[in-house]
Structures are given as structure tokens and as C-alpha cells.
Length: 437
Image 1 (tube, rainbow, N blue to C red):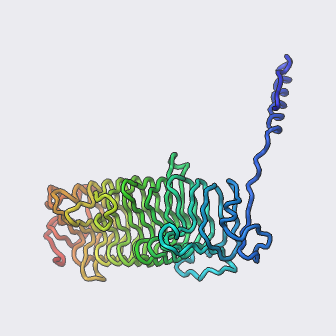
Image 2: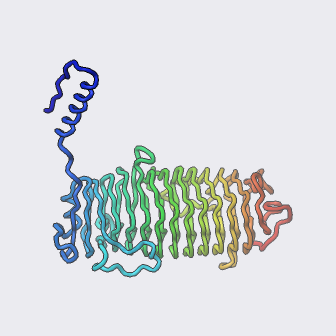
Image 3: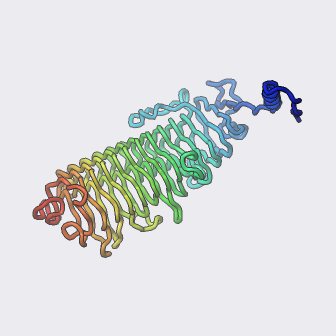
């Protein structure tokens, strides 16, 4: 043990010098932590002949907290379980080439082939620790998911990677004891032709960012699926600056709190571009650009996802989106089985053009009438520019004490610009007109 004994009584300057010397002795006597190490992995020792490991899992087991695992070009397999804070860094094609992605080459890229089995045996990289980063890795063929993160941990980062032909690219979960400082992120990755989803949540995602990713050709479900098991919510999510081309759907959004989907660019989805299910509170859908959606640009509907509570979303802001050439409706507030899907929300300052032309039926902004009195009501629809719709630019089938006998206010905060409507005086002073449905 290092001791600093009391200094003798001396003038003040001597006392200060003695104190500084004492502090220096203490610092020098404390052992320094070992520096973080870099562990190299090479499947055949061709690119990195000095690598100590030939599998990713072997390097993970040998790594200490804070270490980096460098995955040299090659092909790797076998499940990987991470239970320590570390970084895995490989080499992948540029994410920006996602829509023209060339086949990854094992001589140039670090390719991880996940197990093709169904269920738990088909999880590729299973993350059970905080402060884990996966950087520039190609992940492919997972029967369940390329990566799964445990909802008990935070500060996970996935970046500059290519996730190709998996069932799900990543099942993304996290917790955040302190908002902002515990944030997890999936950023600047390429999700190419994954079967069910590029990014999917099921068991809770809190304080996370999904940004600047490229999605191409998601086959069956959606590029981003924010879903929930019963009792689970997704809080403080920011989904921004992503690009989607030719996906089945860009986003399915269920059970979010205080979340934002903004400034995403979506083109040529097979179905709806942005699907909003039930149980969302204080959700912002703002500044997105949607072109050539197969059916709807933005759709509110609860019934296709019975695992989520069939509760109408509330406090939603749909604003400043540009939606052109949606196959059926630009913005649709649906109803089925008498359910309400959107209440006490705002649809404002959107530009919606040419809805329904490709399928010969559809409206610019359409609000359905649930059988329950007052449902799909108390919404404000204002300041929108709607034109070129096959049926009606403005369509509201609800009944109540709002504009033109509907349950909603279409003019309280700024007039909508439109030329056709299903109810007299809904969007403008005049009779109902447009093509009847």
C-alpha cells in the first residue's frame, strides 16, 4: 500500500509542492488496465496468416471486454453467441450500392453464413451484452434471423453491414435506463432481399435509432417491422433518412410511444408504404416521400395484426409527407369489424397526388366509418394539398358534429386544397363530386 505521511509545517508553497508529489506517487503506484486487444480471425489463414482463430465464435470466447475482433475476408459459419462488450469488424460491400448489390466475394469480403434452420437454431449472431458493435460484416442465409439482440441490454450498434437473403435481417431489441446515453442504433446498412423483414422488433425496443439504411426487395412482409408481443411496447424510436426500393412494405408500426418516422424515401412498394397498426401513442410520421406505392401511401388499420392490442392510435401527427401515385389511397384511415384506428390526431400539410389511378379506384385522403359511433373521430385534417385522385381528393364517411356532418375537423387550422369530395362542403364550399364509389 502506498502511503503519504503528513507534511511538516512549512511555508504554503512547500505544502503545495509536497501535495502534488504525493498525488503523483499514488497515480504511478496504481496498476494500469491492459489495453484493448485486436483478435484476428481468418477461415483459411489466406488473407491474415497470423490470425490466431479460424472461427468467429472462438475469437469471441477468447476476447475480453473492450476487445475488437477483426474478421478477415473469407466465409464463416456456426452460431455466434456474444456475452461480452466487444466490437466485430469485417469488410463488406458499400451499403449505398444496395439496389445494385453484387454478390459478395469471400476473397474480398467477410461473409458470415448463419444457420439455415428454423426457430432458435436459425439465429446467427445472438447478442447478450451491452456495448456491442458489429461493423462491415456480410450476414446471410439465416433461417430465423441474422442477428438477435437481447432486450435486457443497450448500446448495440450495427453499421455498414450487408444483410442478404435472411428470414429476418436483425431482430432488434434494447432497453435504456437513461434516455440518450443508452441509445442503440442500426445505421448505414444494406438489407437486401430478406424474406420476412430487414429489421424486426418483437420483445421491446427502447431509445433506438434506425437511420440511413438501404432496403431493397424485402420479399414477404416489410423492410422494418415494429411489432410487439402482448404487453410489450416500443419507446422513443427514431426512424429517419432510410431508403426503400421495391420492398413489399417499408414499415409496419405497432405499439410505439413517443416515436418518429421522418424523412424516409420509399419507392415502388408492392403494398402499403407505411402501415400503422394499433396502440401507437404520440407518433410522428413527417417529411417522408412515398412514390408508386402498390396500394396505399400511409394506412391506419389494426385488424391484420391480432397479436397487438386492437386499440386505435392516438396523438399521431401525419405531416409534410409527399405521396404520389399510390395504387389505391394516398392516406387511408380504415375500419374493419367496427374498430376505430385513428382518433385525436392530426393530418396536415401533406401533398397527395394521383391516388388510385393505377388501379382505377381510390381517394387522396380517405377516412372510413366504423360501426361504433364517434370512432375514427376528433381528428384534424388541414392544410393538405390533394389533387388528381381517381375518386375523391377528400373522403370522409364518418358521422358526427364535425365538418360537413363528419366526426372530424377538416378546416379548423388551415384550408385544404382539393377539387373533389364525397360530402358537400368537406374540403371546399360546394357539392359532393368526383367519381362515386
